[in-house]
Length: 309
Ligand SMILES: O=P(O)(O)OC[C@H]1O[C@H](OP(=O)(O)O)[C@H](O)[C@@H]1O
Figure 1 (tube, rainbow, N blue to C red):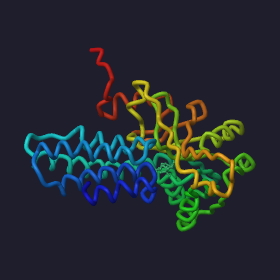
Figure 2: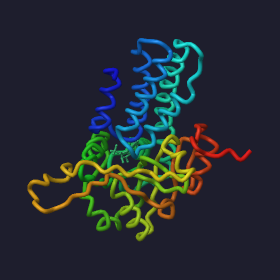
Figure 3: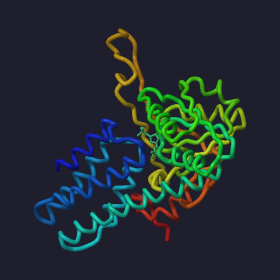
Figure 4: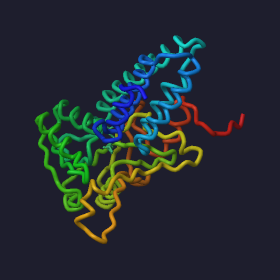
């Protein structure tokens, strides 16, 4: 495997590169590096491209951004010669990265609009898109406060808290289990997404669905910020989103707990009835419009979907 590809793949696996958007962009970059570094014939290129695709797909199973980045870069490749194919992949990768960065800025603006002046916001884990919305609201002059969860077991909430504090935002970190206790102080919940299914369910960091439940109970609006490449085309044809379970040692050392089993799922699904809106770069939509986004806008092949025309 090519060194620069392996380096990105292993960083995604170990979560040194994490967050669905960053994972998508890193995947596109790995495919660009592969095309730049490849030496050999056209036939070898196409064969090794498949191997690189499968390797990257194996690094993290839940975030569809990884899969959609591959579709975008590889399935749209054009050309008949080796040079043309390589150039096409490099261009598609650069295009994906650029569009992803632009989407982040646009969602920041749309999402900020949903945050009222004076609001106390709750966020979970570390979502670059959710943070973008919060920071934009603050830069727009809104007097906001943020509560953020520490987010066990990886404690990505630490990254969020530091980023918001650095921006000058009033931020309070709480343990994950304190969410319902504080919900009475919250005006709006803002989170990101790893994958959005065709029925509008949002798969995000473990604990998100509990937060949505507590918000629903307290009638607190719950919004999800996500680029359109986090919608999953495969869910249209009945595939279920695979929930990644990671090493139990991320929770505790099993050797210290003889006879105890551990489970470490890192994502859960929040049903659409608990979600007030999804903020995408194409606009703010109802979760029930997820299928429309996948069908009309993503313009990626849904492998295995029957064509009825
Ligand atoms: O794309 P952005 O908004 O940055 O992140 C989206 C989501 O990706 C993260 O997953 P992980 O920490 O990689 O497991 C979190 O679940 C976060 O909400």
